[in-house]
Image (cartoon, rainbow, N blue to C red; front, side, top):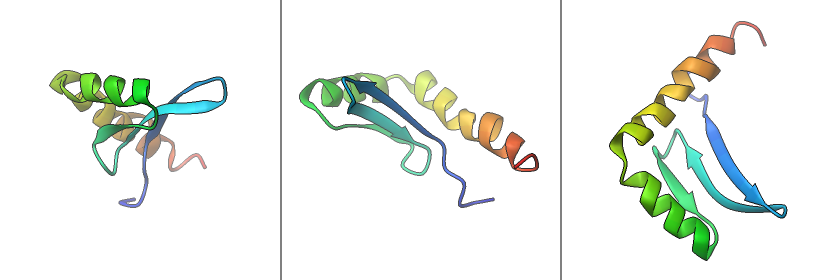
Amino acid sequence: LKDIEYVYSDYYNKLEIFRFSSSLGKFVGYTEYGVKQAEYRNNIPSYIASMKAQRETYCLHNVGIW
């Protein structure tokens, strides 16, 4: 169960803008705009905490189903 990872990505025009990875615990930007968005989102502790909680809420909950 420790190798399960929650990944949230934002795309625009089939291009990945930024991504949250539960293994990193932060957002990473892949474009100029994405880097700015990642910095903004990484500076909101409650938002980071809610994204980290998604792993337990969504992923670990569905382990038994799949």
